[in-house]
Image 1 (cartoon, rainbow, N blue to C red):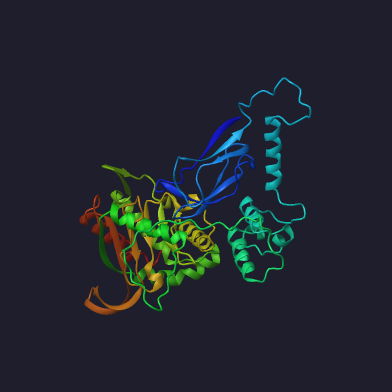
Image 2: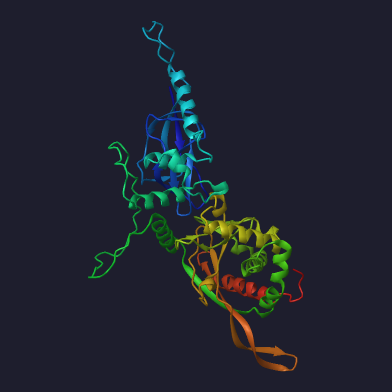
Length: 434
């Protein structure tokens, strides 16, 4: 029998490794081509690695919780290719040949991946595996409410059910052979030694995603010398224009018109003026990006941060940007983003004004070289130049904070860029058609 390697796939230029969360198959299990074999996680999303071959899982190369680099093998699959010829001597009892054994195993795997006939919904292999591990039968699985597409049960649904189920008195004692629930992978986060814990203090273990975020934030600070420039912008015309047109836009497009797509449009225009902001650093080489892909930082309900990316934002009008922003923001809150939708960003916007903050000093997402924070819009007295002289008026003002990598972005470029974004906001045409 031939052996084929299952490799850790490439998941984006900024992702060099992933953590193995849960093996969906064990050694000796049959597996069909394209059937998931293992669940992995990066600092951004959870994903599954499908088998590129049909056959039998020959060897699992890494335990759950291990961190594996992109391109390294994670498992070996025994396939029918290269199978040895059957012995010429007749066997007393007809036994399946290795090829037949694999074919039978593949068929069994396909049948295992198909929901039972009694079931009315589709269940992913991951959900079925969790159900088997937790001793949940098909009848019980059918009763779990699903929040996925077409009421499908998602990983979050079944894990939440298992959590609540485990708190209730068990009607039947689980068999001794039932596998234990997998232990969450541990990712080391270095901290200051000898932290004193006093009476009444509560120790909270970081979850996996928070550990990865912590590592990435520290790594970005170690890689990029951060500098932040600030500009205050008078966005009165922009605010009044949106207030006048958001109802019209909602009625015509069926979409909300938030400030985010407007800010992104101004950022894209400024990037076209200063293309050396839209770059990455590879050693001593600078890569100037052709595409303008804008990441928009979004907080999830659990408090973790995720950055969906609007690809080719420079090719979209305001309506297209609004649709993309609303769609990505909604699915970010529901944890339904795909891996492709959170990678490939070339510049990032984070709206700290959402939390009532007037400004911030955001950390650059690698391998980008800059990120902008939009502060809260507040009414303030400001000096306004008129044809009759300067007057003090109530204006809508906001701060823009621009953090950039001082290895390749000097103060002049970093400062001019954020000033240009503010200019486009201040020069917003109040008579523009929506």
